[in-house]
Each structure stands twice: as structure tokens, then as C-alpha cells.
Length: 155
Image (cartoon, rainbow, N blue to C red):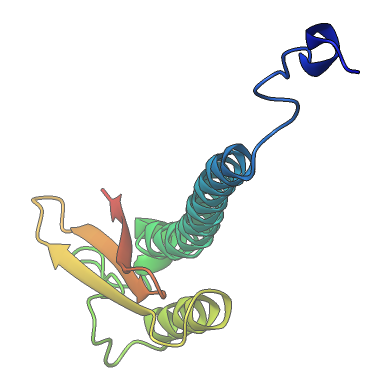
């Protein structure tokens, strides 16, 4: 016959592994972390592209500004005129000056080839007492994120 001692079993622990609920919660936490990293990576790529585009714009605009600065020099502009310098007018739209038109066209082609086909360059001139003028060269372009611009001033 069986004694009472044999009928009594040792206590069983309530948990001997991981439950499915714990595994699901762990996977959910991991998924949220990975999605956060993916979002941060996307923002980093967009920032890198923006910096690249700003660098290209700076090169193109500053090159055009250097051309304006060089070509409005009194020595280049004199051309035998004794009443004062006759300076190339770079104000857009450029008409009647082959040098200014060539510089502008080259810069615009560079911008459209390297940045975006819709890139545009606008040059404005403010009169100054020395007749050289103050030029502002502004480039605008759009990418898939936003419209952007870069400007340089030639004093």
C-alpha cells in the first residue's frame, strides 16, 4: 500500500523559462529601436545631401562673383573711355555685354548640371558712389525636400 509520504509530490516552480508574452514584448522594444535608428539615418542622409548642395552652390556663386569682381576692375573696364569706367553690367537679364552674358551662362549651366535642372541665378545691382555698384548674386534651386538658396555679395 502507498503511504502518504509517497503521494506528496515536491513543489513545482511556477516558471521554468521565458513566456511567449515576454518574447513578444522584447521583439516590440527591439523593433521600436530599429525604427528609430532608421529615422536617424534618413535625417543624416538628408543633411549630408543638403551640405553637398550648399557646397556646390557656394562654388558656383563665388566663381561668378569673382568674375564680376575681376571684370569690373577700372583697368579692364577703361577701354579708352576717359570719362570714367565703363563696367560690364551683370544685372539679370543680361543684354548687350558678351563677357557678362558668357560668365552668367557658364555659371547657370554649372548650377543646372551639378545641382538641379530648375536652378536659377539672379544678379541684382545697387548703385554706389564709385560707380562700381554692389552686386548680389543669388542662386535658388529645389530638391525633393525643400527649396534652397545661396547668395554672395560683391562690394
